[in-house]
Image 1 (cartoon, one colour):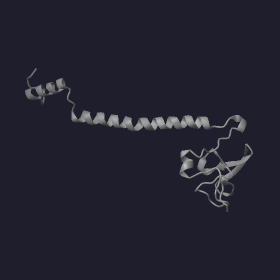
Image 2: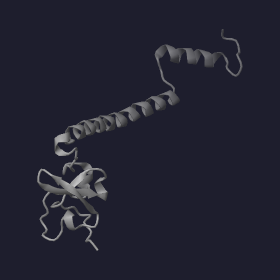
Image 3: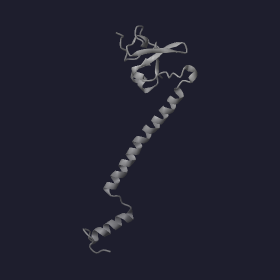
Image 4: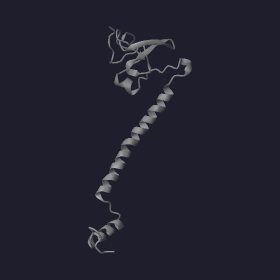
Length: 136
């Protein structure tokens, strides 16, 4: 067992055997384990946040009685990013006179339309965000 085997000699085999008995980890194994743990620690919260956001968005969708229209939620991340508010505080700046807004109809007696920024979601005509562009 302790005869020379390939590049190993007797002392190396004894040292390896002792390390295995003590449960010591090699440097490469240590870094692989740390990378795996770190990756899991980063990915798990992101995955949970995404799943939570999807569940909330599913609850936010309007029923067919409201025409199946999904309005922009001011708490949505994109809406927060452009500081979207459902009622403009600036008299001449609202979605109705924005170049990015296209009127589509009414929901619950309020005029709504689509906006390039929010994709398929509808915005209120009286809303406002920092991406407002004057109609030409």
